[in-house]
Amino acid sequence: MSSTITKTIVGIGVLGAIVLLVQTLRPRHAEPPGSPAEPPVETRTVEALATPAPERSAEVSKLKGRLAEEQRARQVAEAEAAALREQVAPLETNVVVSLGKVEDIGKRAGVFLPAMGELSALAGRDRNTLSPEEKRRLLELQRDHAKLLGALPQITAFQDNPDEYGRFFSSMLQQAAGLTDPQAAQVQEFMRQRGIVMNQQELNSAEEPTDPKLEEAWEHRRDAFNEQTANGLKGILPPGAAEKAGLGPELMEFLEMDFDKLNLGTPEQKAP
Image 1: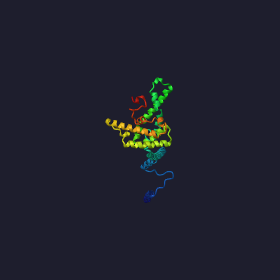
Image 2: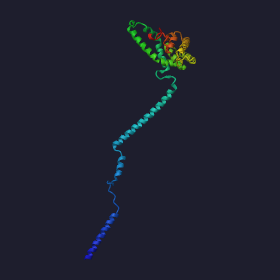
Image 3: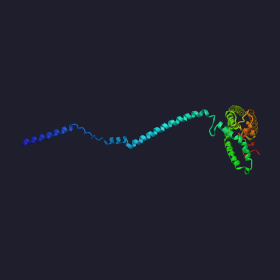
Image 4: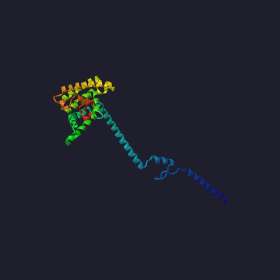
């Protein structure tokens, strides 16, 4: 009896050991669908950072769109700037940065020239004797005169470039005296040649001496040159054109900002 019980206990123990060993060596069953194995904490953290939230994804897409638009706009601006530089390069000698083209400045001066005598007459009268219309006209002429004075530094600089010098006088006298295109072209060529001679004789504005002792002699030489130029212009203009434009040595000196011998402009600028 005792031997039988002992055998039974031993048999149960062996059987339990076998079952435990089988369970240990048996491969695990796959997890049922919908219940994946949970990855380690480190993996979950990396995945969370790598996968943006819906809001973050929308913001990133928006920024990418704006960046693309900025890049396209920059490309367009660079293309337009390059095209503009190509257009401006050949016009550098024809353009005055502050005031416009040489011809435009000449036309504005030509609009005012016929009225300079009127301005001088109105400005020389007692203001109390002027009618309301005359006062308004005087104010209008004074404004135009101020605009012309503001352009004189650039007009004077045209002397340093014979081509610009010729184009300025051509457009100015055509506007002031109603010249035809062939007549204006004749004026342009004449004044271009005079500009060349002026530069050769160092009588252009850039050559004005800074030494007062030399300046007086230089002024006399330029006055004589201007008188020759004015007389030459009168010889090629149609009858009455020079008078209509007020052409003379005084006008030439006015356009050179030489006011000490003028009989033009406001009373303060007239010679005593």
